[in-house]
Image (cartoon, rainbow, N blue to C red; front, side):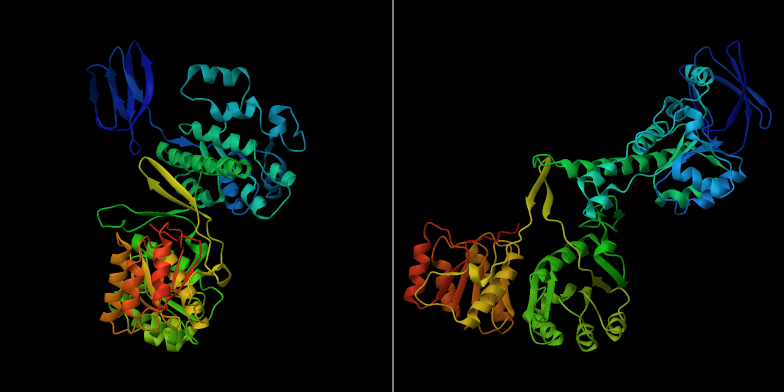
Length: 563
């Protein structure tokens, strides 16, 4: 390939193409055969070849613009700048009136097409004279001829947005109102202009107004191919997101799956430094970040686990949880947030180092002073005292988040093999009404409270898991083990390591016991009550052992695997 330089074609005759050397921009030459190029800087050059391919300078000057938008916010400075650059405007309806209100000339689309806006505004711009002006290929002789033959105006820039379909659905509007917010003309204009990005600029969202204004101001109304292709990419992103929202509104077949998330951000890296990482979602809708560094991929996984765990305790007494690698290493519900934090920390002060902390209520200054003695990555709460924020901000990298009360997705999606696995979110939280006492010994009221407390933690811990709790405090847990017995032994060892007395504690299991070995080991450790789903064909073995040894056991009927 020849070196990229900039030329202007000045003549073509007898297979000799003459150019003038220019500055700036790019020209790329792709010869089929050997080429002879003679060039003197600032003078004419000749390029000789019988057959050749070439791509000319791709900078385009905007001379005409079609503008048709639902929202006029931020539009005025663009229109005024384009007017200063002698751009011809085409428009219709409310946008036409807006441009006229600025005392700027505008040609009505109806005057171009000789058709009025019809069918209650459903058909405005859908006409060959509009789409021909957008879709014509300026380097195609046939297109140029037809533009002249049918008196079609060239359209270099299209600014259009879409009816607010998603907002209309979210508002609870009637079906008729929702249907009328399915944009037809706008989406067609976007796709047409984006398809013809080699010649046309498409601006499909108010979010791109600032970039457009910068370009037309600093580049004097010109755009490069790279500029136009970037705008086209964003336009197709907007149109695909819009179509997905419409499809999901109509779709009732659960074997069809489409998802489009408009907001995305690049993370520092993925789970490990050699992996790229991205987050797609509206983080600002969920949290206000008060302080700290950017969240990492692993931070976000832990924050997600923390949010789902604390949701189990949303309307309860002050509750504080500490998580590491998506699992709770400390959790307590107490009469004050400070005490809840201190008891949660005591559950495993070793694992708490570098963890994610979350509270179900306000973090006050006293609690913040205690937290400030621990190195932790993230602190989350629905609100803070002003003094608490000042204290926690003493560590410059510590991330402080205010959690907003918003609805979370009700489906969980993960990659598997060459596709996706999708399931409903586990929204069942075991409660007192769901408990079935299956042993001669019934649990006491205190034990029932602890059993339900332990079950909530168990539900949000990686399987296989065993959780010990006592007095609304997580004593220890065994997490992510390949056997339930191993998880139980891990929990006992951890409780002993941190000096907890398991006598009078309760045990929760995320799945049933196929053999009585777990209740046997638990009894020897001091456990007095057990909660599990039940459902094994050998449930009777565990029940008989509990009866013989005066252990209380309840079944919930709901398994809580978490992988």
